[in-house]
Image (cartoon, rainbow, N blue to C red; front, side, top):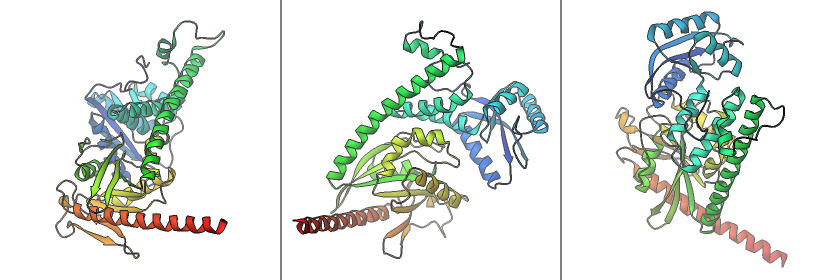
Length: 393
């Protein structure tokens, strides 16, 4: 039972809990890479991996997802290691999660719950905490049995329950009220951000968003460019709260750069929806710097996953420059700074090391050219409007 306010981190494990990871292959590919990503997620959530249970199935079992034989194997691993938590690298239905916990007599969490827990620990700003709480509540609403009565204390307590209303109905009503309140608060933040964007647009300032797969080095690049001090760590989802700074480009003026939350394979839809307001910085940008870990063997799949989320939030038509980062960590034959242009002569990709600063001048060159291009487009647009106005007169 959850007996602490929903606005707090819903992390119910101790700082270093032993966990058994379960990752099954249903023939969709990426099984080894997906397991490695689950390990990184567990480490980011301060879990100690005591055992890994894998296997192949044609389809999930309706009752326990893994099937009775695999559940017995998980139980053996739990008893052998003394683990207190089982983490599935998949999304479980409420019934599957409940059946597994009854069989295994341990707390069972799925991939979405794990990511939500990491987000709850990482969020620092007031808006970020509200967004995480909203995502948690909307996800946990599907698993609601009891446990939301603590919300009564925030709303006045005695007298809230209607005649003949069951505990579950009360909890759902209180949960719905809290979700509505969170959405109203986030709408105010969204309005404030829209005003700030309109102000920048009136000033003809180029807006740039740094996007990419989680742990690709976005915040390191952001700090290098703007001399900011955004949090940097070798872990998944180190950055949640969007940070915006101005960068002065010699002879061209200033551009506005935003550091955004990282993406991941199968990013929970509840998170995409909750963070849509923050991600609007990406949607409204004039240019995207798509940061990729150049040394990752899965970089092609990671690029595809980022582009998939960008399409989901309506940012797939914004011009991109691919930033192949971490060249300092790969072989010298391929790990050299530089850039390449597309068939239109625009800089399409840049190779650099955000950690050492090698190749940073090429990004500044790309930004300088983008400022010039935007100014030319602005003049052309103004000329077209003047011509139209004269014809109407």
